[in-house]
Length: 317
Ligand SMILES: [Zn+2]
Image (tube, rainbow, N blue to C red; front, side, top):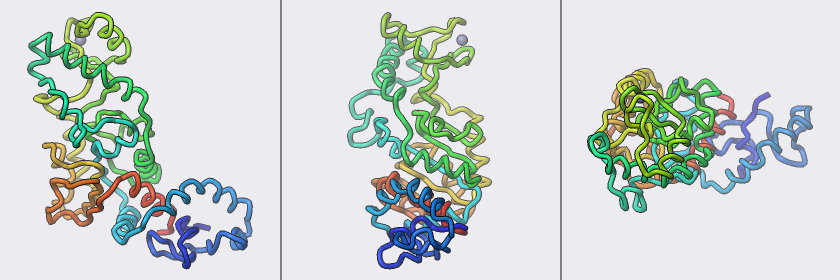
């Protein structure tokens, strides 16, 4: 028997899901009749206890018609392209680069050409990366990353294309086959000559002691495996992202101002084929006024997406 967990706490109308308006089929109340309908009260009770934390959180959410639409889109799609930006990781302690308190408000980025030609620029870049390394190393995924992982487990996720370099989609369990990190990742360092990749920790230790930019055994410059200003995106990553945009049946942009080219073109490639395009972000985005956008939800992604995914995956289709 299936049922919609959201039905548990819709005030005054427990027979209908507050997210999707569906009849929850078999779940009619919490108590005292909770569990009787199924004839399996202990299974019902275990399921209830498992979901209790989510229920407490969800009960504080003001559910709106746009969130119900998002739930319906998620439920109806089978090849979802999820595009993510820094806004989904601030809840994991990852600094925002472009916001009002963003990193780039107090630091000048080192351009790739300068990194390759100047030891002073390399030291500046490693210094900046060393400053942020503990936060990246210790960051843990939040409910948004986990909700996206659940979409993959439910066989609804085509691809996650992220601008983020924090590696949190991988830490949450999104598979490499379903992930494109367009701007690279801080979790490795890469030789700029032979392109071998290495664990960053010993190289941060070395830099901390010597203040000299680390070198590969081949003599090449080692650099955290992120895309710097002035550095081209990896062609293979762009190709995988574009292929996903060609095949998606729903595209959702999460926590991004959609202002960085060419990354921000990826969701538009799908939307221009007529695919439903939804945006969730706190603050304006560059795509807000485009006719391709079918749904725009203002707010913190972590307070919106996980509950919509839960409802979409739990409610009967
Ligand atoms: Zn090398």
